[in-house]
Length: 298
Image 1 (cartoon, rainbow, N blue to C red):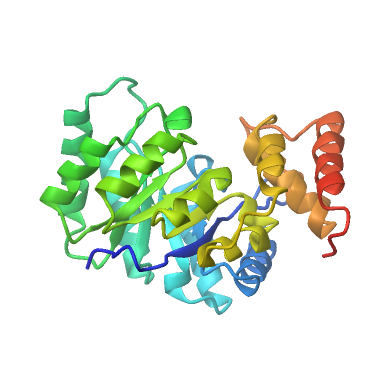
Image 2 (cartoon, helix red, strand yellow):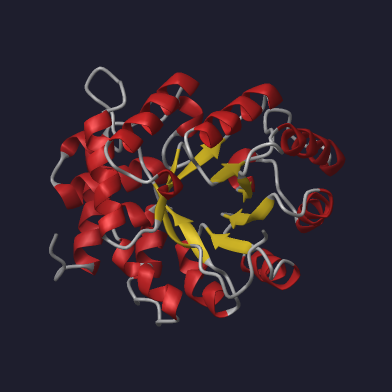
């Protein structure tokens, strides 16, 4: 059933993907990281999203990682599956596989290769996708990240999809960083999960009824986010931290801070076409972090 405003989705870490020296997913490190995030207050993590470099992982790799996480003892409902596919058949197959592995939620972007596609065309794609997976129990979170995908999921599109598939649209992840858009979603879709991708907006959004976040920052500082679910005042260091992250390519910067916090340099590896931060960039982001959080201990 659709969410209600009183429900809390919680903090889901947009889990980043560790790689071995030969470029394979480091399954053991991924499982260790996932369990650590859950132990620190995340209610779930999102596998194969933007911060996880999902578009650069093969379907077989993502399935293998998913199965390994389950085998490590993580509950199926604690894994949200990111689906970032332009081919409808690939998106459908990924969703059906996620369902077969026990997932409850999938986070789905629109098809994004042909820029400037009409809302009408995107709605057709989504309705075909939803029809094809209607025999599962999956709940779909629509993923609005236009600065990356150039394929916005606007309020009217969301309304159209809720109208045609009311029991399948769980909500929206808004990663636009646009406060006016977040407010519009919170106002128009108060019975759905509105999840915030820009952590700087999370506290204010929670006050208006947002039910949680799918967050890159949660990879290394979930304790800054979890208290916001209970209406706590945002830590004054959260916004400067996010401001520092977005000065750099965000996914490599998040991975650099995971490496810094854990003392495991392997976390800095990324998959092409992304590249690791330069030494100068690494020192800048870690020094920025240390300046903000001088008193923090692992």
